[in-house]
Length: 103
Image (cartoon, rainbow, N blue to C red; front, side, top):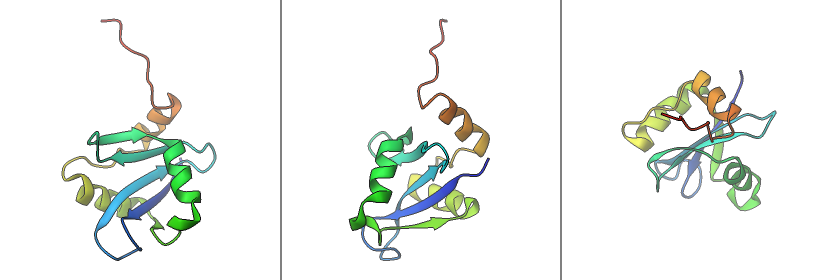
C-alpha cells in the first residue's frame, strides 16, 4: 500500500515546529489526521482534502516520506506514533468506524 504523507504548519512551511501530519490514500481519498482536540489519530478525509485543496494553505504543508512522517508524528503527539500502514489500511477499510463488539 502506498500512502501520501504531508506535514502541516501553523504558518508557512518551516516557520516553526510542525503542527500536524496527514496520511492519505490518493486513490480513495481516505485520510488520517492527528486531532489536537481528541488527542488521537482520527479518520478525517473531508478535513484533509479541504486543507490540502485550499489555495490559502499551499505554503502551509509539504509532502514527506513515511520515515519523516513517523518522526514528525512523535514530535507533535509526544507519545502516539503514526499508525503503521497495516493499521492505516484497516482504519481506511472501515472508513474510520469499525463494527462495535457485542461483548
